[in-house]
Amino acid sequence: MENTVWDYSDNTPVIDSLAEKMAERSVIDPSLYSKYDVKRGLRDIDGRGVLTGLTDISTIKQNKLVDGKLVPCEGELYYRGYNVNDIIDGITKDNRFGFEEVVYLLLFGEMPTRDELKNFKSLLIQYRTLPQNFVRDVILKAPSEDMMNSIARSVLTLFCYDKNPNDTSLNNVLRQSIQLISVFPMLTVYGYHAYNHYLRDNSLYIHLPEPSMSTAEVILSLLRPDRKYTDLEAKVLDMALILHMEHGGGNNSTFTTHVVTSSGTDTYSAIAAALSSLKGPKHGGANVKVYEMFEDMKKNLTDWDDDEQIEGYLEKLLDKQAFDRKGLIYGMGHAVYTISDPRQKILKGAVRQLADAEGYSKEFKLYERVERLAPEVIGKKRKIYKGVASNVDFYSGLLYSMLNIPCELYTPLFATARIAGWSAHRLEELVNTGKIIRPAYMSISNPREYTSLADR
Image (cartoon, rainbow, N blue to C red):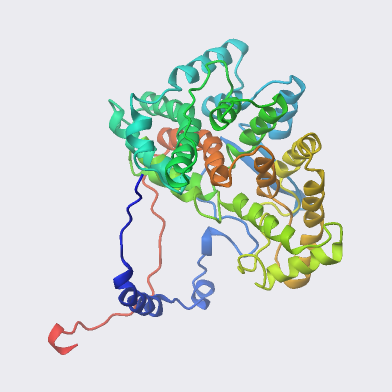
């Protein structure tokens, strides 16, 4: 398939000149943020977020009260009051898939009974179908090398196939949410297959999901040519989906969902906006950066067991002399957690188990070494106001690579999980506020006299 793009090369010098002028005129004196007590990124200097809303969907704990003072503690994450560790432990002990059960919990606020879970799974299966010819007419006819763009476009196009797309009643939005949760694995994997075939000239295969499969099994079966996967692979992916599906109301994409929902817009536009937010490398794209960083690291290390050599590479990262030269060690640090990210601690155990089973023990040990050494290197090179620990993205890239999931799908898989949280927050916003979210910005412009065009 011919891939036609806009040709703008002739105007490059003009655009470059205009961009330089724009940049010069757009700079704001950084000291003004302190002068007017403006919270850059809606965060205090110690990393605490500015309180902008209330939610009953999930809770993040990173501090505890000791002698009347808040001090950092091991991170904890709760879904509707349930500790995520307990949820994962219960599902693991029963040796079953849990994503669908936790989706129910986030949407309806309670753990389902056996009958409720059975009926909810049946509903998800009924909705796990796309409109007739949608794959051919929408996904295959306009392949994109950016999977997040492909999914967002598909979501926006589904608006045209909905009989009541603009109806924001709770019943209708709940129906739309469940449908989107159901078809996200298909939008994600089919988008990749279109890209892999038309833009990379590989074979095209489109499988249909089996009704009896869990969401994790659907993803692996749709992705692989032979549809085969091990039970361990599917169970570990199921765990990863649960850990990624929700993380408080303050993360960028979920906050975007609240903001856009508050304007009264439709479900498809709200989810497309959340996808656009998650696409950024500072949010959902972080696991891709971690994986690419380690691939570069492995090329530059002669001994993966040499701490001194690894420290040298990490120092080069911080000094903008290695990898993408951005001065970052990806997968280290979090906007909220300082001591530990509870999701990372859970995922690490599962990744270790899969690494031993799939022959990736050497790679896993390298990740462990970097996890141990990076905070020390960062502490030496940077002035930091809080602790630094590995986050959930640190091991997720390794997990996906062991599952033979292409790098292009790392962030889309995040979205396939997080749509459950986005949907719950959209419904919560519709139920509770009724007010448009409109934060204040302080203008620092000075009055200027208008001059006619002839006199400029």
